[in-house]
Amino acid sequence: MKDMNQDPIHLIIKLDGEETQLNARKEETTDGISFFKIEQQGKLITQVRKIDNEWEQLWGDLHQQQIDEIGTALDREED
Image (cartoon, rainbow, N blue to C red; front, side):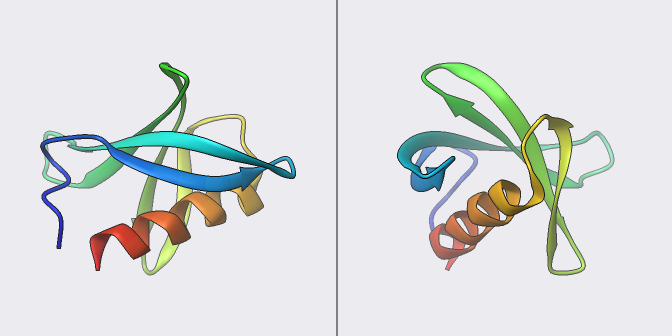
Protein backbone atom coordinates (compact mmCIF):
# COMPACT_ATOMS: atom_id res chain seq x y z
CA MET A 1 0.00 0.00 0.00
CA LYS A 2 1.33 3.43 -0.94
CA ASP A 3 1.79 6.13 1.66
CA MET A 4 -0.82 8.46 0.24
CA ASN A 5 -0.17 11.13 2.89
CA GLN A 6 3.16 12.14 1.34
CA ASP A 7 3.24 12.58 -2.41
CA PRO A 8 0.20 13.18 -4.59
CA ILE A 9 -0.93 10.15 -6.52
CA HIS A 10 -1.49 10.42 -10.23
CA LEU A 11 -4.73 9.03 -11.59
CA ILE A 12 -5.63 8.51 -15.24
CA ILE A 13 -9.40 8.36 -15.70
CA LYS A 14 -11.98 9.17 -18.35
CA LEU A 15 -13.71 12.46 -17.61
CA ASP A 16 -16.36 13.48 -20.13
CA GLY A 17 -15.09 10.78 -22.52
CA GLU A 18 -11.49 12.02 -22.52
CA GLU A 19 -8.56 10.43 -20.74
CA THR A 20 -7.50 12.87 -18.06
CA GLN A 21 -4.70 12.97 -15.52
CA LEU A 22 -5.69 13.98 -12.01
CA ASN A 23 -3.65 14.35 -8.85
CA ALA A 24 -5.06 13.19 -5.52
CA ARG A 25 -3.80 14.06 -2.08
CA LYS A 26 -5.07 12.34 1.05
CA GLU A 27 -6.07 14.63 3.92
CA GLU A 28 -7.83 14.15 7.25
CA THR A 29 -10.48 16.17 9.00
CA THR A 30 -9.82 17.27 12.56
CA ASP A 31 -11.76 14.23 13.79
CA GLY A 32 -9.61 11.83 11.74
CA ILE A 33 -11.88 11.11 8.76
CA SER A 34 -9.88 10.67 5.54
CA PHE A 35 -10.80 12.41 2.30
CA PHE A 36 -9.04 13.23 -0.96
CA LYS A 37 -8.44 16.57 -2.65
CA ILE A 38 -8.51 16.07 -6.41
CA GLU A 39 -6.71 18.47 -8.74
CA GLN A 40 -6.70 18.79 -12.52
CA GLN A 41 -3.86 20.83 -14.03
CA GLY A 42 -3.08 22.36 -10.63
CA LYS A 43 -6.68 23.42 -9.94
CA LEU A 44 -8.78 21.85 -7.16
CA ILE A 45 -11.86 20.34 -8.84
CA THR A 46 -13.40 18.23 -6.07
CA GLN A 47 -13.02 16.60 -2.68
CA VAL A 48 -14.19 13.02 -2.19
CA ARG A 49 -14.40 10.44 0.56
CA LYS A 50 -15.46 6.84 0.93
CA ILE A 51 -18.33 6.08 3.28
CA ASP A 52 -19.65 2.50 3.64
CA ASN A 53 -17.83 1.42 0.43
CA GLU A 54 -19.43 4.24 -1.59
CA TRP A 55 -17.57 7.30 -2.89
CA GLU A 56 -19.21 10.67 -2.32
CA GLN A 57 -18.34 14.20 -3.28
CA LEU A 58 -17.82 16.66 -0.43
CA TRP A 59 -17.24 19.63 -2.67
CA GLY A 60 -17.28 20.17 -6.43
CA ASP A 61 -19.51 19.88 -9.49
CA LEU A 62 -18.75 16.40 -10.83
CA HIS A 63 -21.42 13.83 -11.64
CA GLN A 64 -21.69 10.66 -9.55
CA GLN A 65 -20.31 8.56 -12.43
CA GLN A 66 -17.17 10.74 -12.46
CA ILE A 67 -16.86 10.43 -8.68
CA ASP A 68 -17.19 6.65 -8.99
CA GLU A 69 -14.42 6.59 -11.62
CA ILE A 70 -12.14 8.64 -9.37
CA GLY A 71 -13.00 6.38 -6.43
CA THR A 72 -12.26 3.23 -8.43
CA ALA A 73 -8.85 4.65 -9.39
CA LEU A 74 -8.16 5.56 -5.75
CA ASP A 75 -9.16 2.06 -4.62
CA ARG A 76 -6.63 0.57 -7.06
CA GLU A 77 -3.89 2.83 -5.69
CA GLU A 78 -4.63 1.93 -2.06
CA ASP A 79 -4.32 -1.83 -2.67
